[in-house]
Amino acid sequence: MKVRRWMTAGAVAVATVAALNTVPAAAGKPYDPTSQTLGALGLRHGLQVGTAISMDALNDADDPQYRKIAATEFSSVTAENVMKWESLEPTRGNYNWGPADQLVDFAKRNRQRVRGHVLVWHNQLPEWLTGGVADGSISKPELRELLRRHITTVAKRYQGRIWQWDVVNEAVSDPWDTPPTLHYKGFWAEHLGPGYLADAFRWARAADPKALLYYNDYNIEAFGSGNPADDKTQFVYDMLRRLRAQGVPVDGVGSQGHLGTQYGNYNTFQVTEALRRFTSLGLVTAFTEVDVRSQLTEGVRAGDSEEINPRLQASAANFSVLMKACLAVRSCLSYTVWGFSDNHSWVPGWFDDPPEGLATIYDENYQPKLAYHEIKSDLILAGPPYVLPRLAPKPRR
Ligand code: XIL
Figure 1 (cartoon, rainbow, N blue to C red):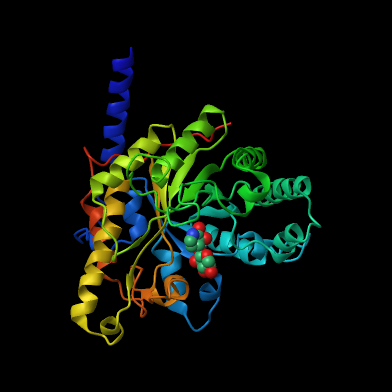
Figure 2: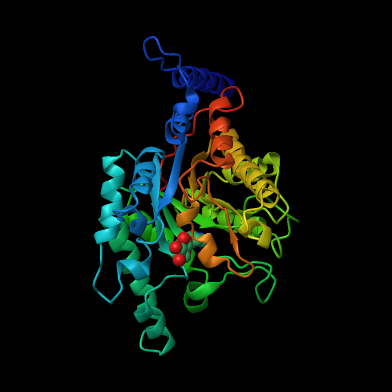
């Protein structure tokens, strides 16, 4: 029985692959995959290739190239900032939906899916909220109710228009934090305790029955020691296994993919293995914020190609490792870059001691970098039997 079922599933998969891989040849012209967009090439595998969008850049009349690439190259978009709480509710009770609505409309016009980012995070919270908790004017029960209302209001407003929601972001500490033993960190854990995670997913599900609900975090691309006291991937894995065992409606895990060329690099198999293990919990996966930064040494800043080239190559290799691992695992539904061009990347503003940059797939003049070409070639060269169409998950109740 079981075997037969698998055989049928296999036959369907192969037929689907055959259909997806039909090469669209225009009359007389040979098909040239390099002229296709990343988004179109991803769709051959059912994979969405997305980007974070800066609304300031999108609305800058003097920067038409940003808008053009944002609209054409990608099949999914994420709000880089405008769906964060401080942006949506800058003063208590007054929601400022404009920029987030604009992003969702932009995506619709361009037939892009939307990753919602983010419902619960300890950063970019409005001052009235953190200040109110600090001065005691917002009690703990009130805080929990405010969180429930926020999740409900935002998820309901965009119901039907969000494909994946990052419900909870970055709940877990890093080995360099104090204490170094990994733990639940940040504003929400401190004030509500770790039970807020299960609550958040349940509230999000009640508000939006159809979106895929994700837990999202960085430094979970590969397993380390296997000890949850110092291996963040293991900690997150154990956490998600417990949430699943409690029947919490979490559908997926997002691995942000913020990498740096100065660190040791993962190989494709390590990353594939991590995605597989998350998948074995019954979860779908995604790379949600990929960028690969480098230190801007004096030589780099002076334009010395012998300093720049190895960094561009290492960056491209890291982008490619994550793409190949994603392609290899059918649960990996999307690959999103955190900004596509160096002139609008968050990296230089955020990592400035020492200065870092060169983190994206296009340079400051919107010229595609080696990283762009390498992930494009990964998408072109992939296919069955190792790369199969994506899974089609049903959101959990
Ligand atoms: C960053 C934005 O890119 C910046 O513009 C902003 O100033 C700070 O936040 N992990 C996340 C993202 O989940 O929301 C962060 O985005 C980058 C790290």
